[in-house]
Length: 157
Image (cartoon, rainbow, N blue to C red; front, top):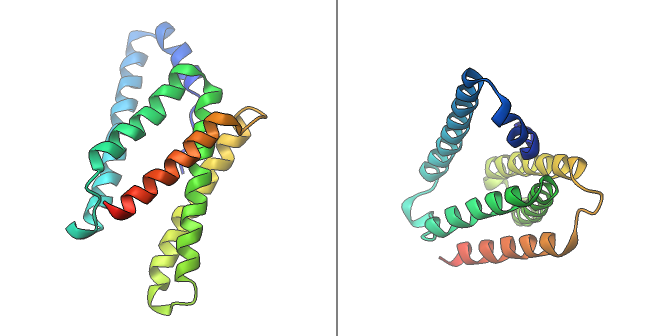
């Protein structure tokens, strides 16, 4: 499981790095970007066409915005955002697991969703540990509610 990076450390270090290390960092960025798209490809192949969201461009834009905007503000904003998103995801997967509970035919799916949930909870816990003491606030509430709205839309479109 990947660790939540501290964007301030990366940003502060980059200008003073030797040229060769800047190239290495650029390579790291390309590798991480590639990894994200590998997983996206797996997710796209994991559902039949009728099961895929038709709002994929919106989710890409919103996801990018939820990463970029806090990163422009501060590391604390990044950690608050991650913690809020992952708190929603924990509840979301929890609801799905509750609906599958006791249904033997869906035990393999429940196991996969349980693994996904555990990974997302670890991300939430790490962000909370690295973030500010005040993990909530208006921004976190907005992110949580926005995530809930996004999930509700995705269920329908």
